[in-house]
Image (cartoon, helix red, strand yellow):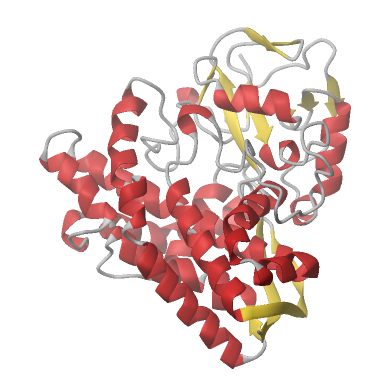
Length: 407
């Protein structure tokens, strides 16, 4: 058995096109649309010669692989490394990188902590903080969209929702970037992100401890489950860690992408300003068009077949969610941003038992900020061009200059 980039190296299955492309190339990640289109055009699966694995980007096959936890497992890692054959850089997530029956127990606890009722109790906080932020930015004039808005809003409300006694925006955002970059190959993006582990990881681990979480937050609810012996104290801390790794960076990405979508589609911003009730479908369309998590892996646990392609047990499959969400055979005018589309079934939050456990929270934050914009802002002007931040798993802006024009 030959290993490559930490996983079993396979040969191209019969009938599958080979492609010498690097989906983790920084230039491609900054402008992935051409790659997405060619990936879909080449077939239901493509063999990546430099990674000795498969990739899928059409909607039907990507949804099938990503959502079938019986045939395609997460416990062997959602990045290139196969955990069956090597130790990951940190303990695997007991939600994202776990399968039933263990996943069922831990997922039940975190789902209860982040229930719609629990999130609803935070909505007044989200609305108030979003309104105050937009008011400040209106008074400020030109501002940098990512740091002043997309990062500032989650970094304000998320620590309060979790109940962190101490918050550090830079460490929270950089930890998420580090976790997602670690899912890719040992490239420059991963190396630069991991170089900060010595500073960030001890702070994150300390923040997850029971004594550093205030009562009434999601973190305390997870530790309460440990006190009731549903999970162990160690598992409680790991579930809080899961919130911190996936709950900030992905939301920052989604909000930055929302600002980009509205700034580059003035008709959509005008429609939102005319009808704040479009805030929720607008956020869903942002998620579909920009796919904040652009790709995750699954590992075939058994010999199987998808889309007429024979897949051998142990095969790593890169599921390109960004490409699937722009599949013209599934979405009419898929590349267009249509604020009122209501794109039910998009894959930005995953599908099946591994769908994003924090999606209710992310939607509440997104809806709060977009509603605040709708109520106060007539249009958004770009004052400095958007620059994208390459990441091995996240599609996010690095910076963009904006000005909010008041109603």
